[in-house]
Length: 485
Length: 95
Image (tube, rainbow over all chains, first blue to last red; front, side):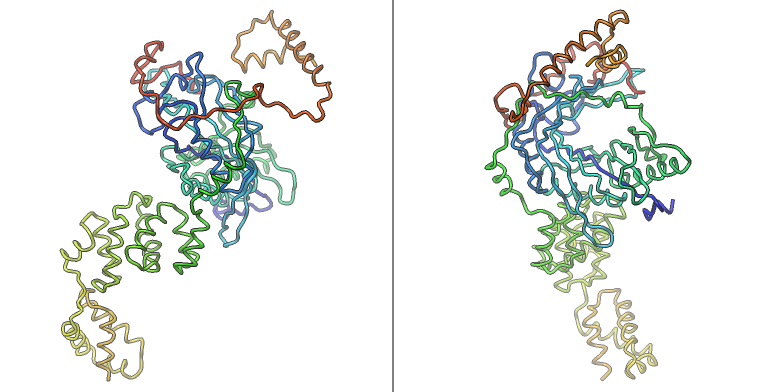
């Protein structure tokens, strides 16, 4: 297990390629006018096209094409002048046509690349082989129907962009870094909501191992439908371990599709898909080639929003954030929007960044929630920080206030008021505390006066304790120094 | 180019076609003939000709991204053999 943790596989080298399915955030489906909204009653968002009634024809959604081109532009890929839809043939009840409309030899987005940051801070470029448009299938529900399978076709026809990487990743951690990078990017450019719980963003991983130094790739297994970053890492590592054990015991890896079971933390073979994998693709005669002009490409490029890396650089250059803070904040569009609001309202980017990457992130991690589910919104958070800036409360008290806000006890001002946490700035009151502490600790005070500066911390601490944290630390400091004269 | 009976069986299985064992040889012959025809065409020199990826010399028309189809579940399910809780029921397919 320890080998899995540090991705050290001895003489073995791991090779990983990812296929990411990003659900495009269109209002309607890729080939019909039915809604793509999540969570509707079964089969209430299907049209004659989605349920494949005879004689119907697909009509391509303009916005789906637009979003695919946007992605191509964002990763500096070749966006094809001409791309063609193809039929991928297989039988399954949640695919009523008997084929999925996808793209095969002429995808809309060709070779591009994206940079990931490794743990040691180095950059690595990962190739994106292609990205193509396709339709999603429906959903099969295998339980509860007395030996029958229930089919919900609401999802059938939802537009997907399948993003296929080169086999450029050499560890599970790199694969996760790449997946996160794509996840962030598709949200920044507004083509996917990135919601992994709802299946809007999922991935298959092609994993193989080979002796280090060997040029030829080993036989790969495909891990299906992994829907969280944590599971990608675990699924890959457990699969690598399985393949190495297998080979070292004299066995051979079989090319197959495997399913990751997150409960048992193992991968297991799905039905042997050798035959099912023969999809007999051919151009779909119902759809004409999609033509993209240079003018359109340039127009889409011009309308691209600020990308994560550009934003990170801007935070460093203009707001003087550290590269680390800027990286953490821009890694999520929602988090950077939150930061933008807080920084603007407080007028103090540095303080905002410290609190967001520190206290706020710690609370989010502890509860395993994303920023959009945080019980304290950006405006409320900004008010809290403003109360530090204007000396109403100290940073230490602010943490307690944040805890109370987190528990729903109201705004920062409400909490400060109701709990009587307002900082004591009345010099007379603080001086009384200082005098008392000095009176109680005469020998320590002599040491302090004698030049033992470390004692300063002790005295400030004692006064803060006596004031229940409400004295202004700077003022306390100043008063103690004045007593030393 | 020729296709044998085993290949006919495989193709039939992929296409979910139930072909009678006795018909297999004639399928094999017919399919082989088609492939022979393709081989003949393949022999033509096509240097300088752009491969055709679609038979129509036209461009895809695009639809605005608007929801124009609304719930017609009741109509659709009226012709389905079995439904329950709004779902279409089919013989169990899990393996």
